[in-house]
Image (cartoon, rainbow, N blue to C red; front, side, top):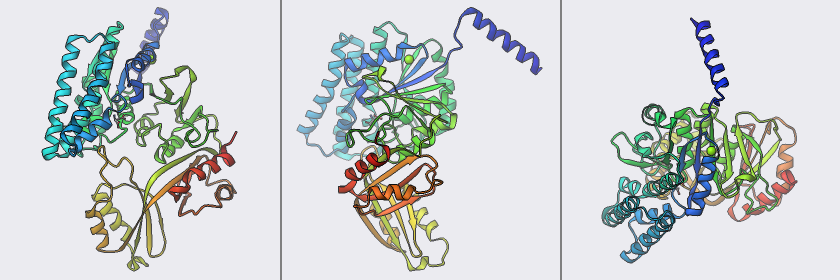
Length: 473
Ligand code: ASP
Ligand code: MG
């Protein structure tokens, strides 16, 4: 049977080639908030999408600023006057784009309907807000930007369809930072979405999803990249493009170091470390779905698509010792001290089970004989910015060990290759920062990074020094 099948495949491939039809690839393209900030920005996205026939799925963020306004409204603490101002700002962002599109009546109606819903939910939030309502409210930004972009694409003569991602982006019910259900998403995407790609460009939302009961959830702030990667995985596409406002991944934040430069290619492992350790271009979890499927990811600027960008691939041609420096501010250092830990087993297990129960993810960890130090990331803890360390966790930890919480710390991470296998890495790094107090060091768990905590106030200088010594051109 097999040779016969193979034979048939060859013939059909030959047939395709003779016909001149490309053996088509499929690309998912994601555009961030600044890329869809207004009509002009959206037109640039449309040009990028239509430049190749491969782009069949477009995932959008909310227009720049919209999610922040919605989050404020969702908190339910604004006065009636402040609410009014927020609602006006939201309306004006949408109206500017609508006007440019000639204000088609059906779309006007749709957007007005959403704006009214937002106003209603915002009022409700001031009475008694709950996490489910918050998510329903903050999800509206993506629902609007995708409506507007679909209209633009249709207006330009392309067969674009608006697609409610909640039909496929199945998550659990942890509102504000829901966890995707990979298998369900795969099945739903195949059922509901895959068929549309053949002759449509599907326009859909990042950031949002729904639980099994159909309630709207969100993946956490900045979650659109993750959405795009999840859809790329579920649909089994060939490439994922992440379009943002910078032409790729930089050696470090160019606002901190003016010599910072874009990296042409970087491996999945390095990029994952970078994202985890604070590089802003990619959401920390973004790469996981792409890594699982080996889908190459391109990161570029929708403002200057011709400037190129960074390819993130499974393996790269270059593998330098130092590739980049990442910085993550707003770290909490939790030191847990217990004399009982001496020669005992199970202490760490107990600590981690408490943290896990409260959904707190641990970043770095070092231990001594009787204490353990753990860093927690305070930024972007949930879509609406609740603190990660609540009283409940602290009470539980306090019950069996001494707890010390330090804040105003920043995490500096050096990213590269074979770092734990090459002699002299530590000397090079710590020579560069010899004038600064290094609070904690993690080295050796991965060959791709070396990271340490410094006081928040030293962070910029430390990054500048490291870049100059190790990555300066
Ligand atoms: N609009 C959401 C946010 O601002 C998601 C995203 O843009 O990735 O966080
Ligand atoms: Mg394209």
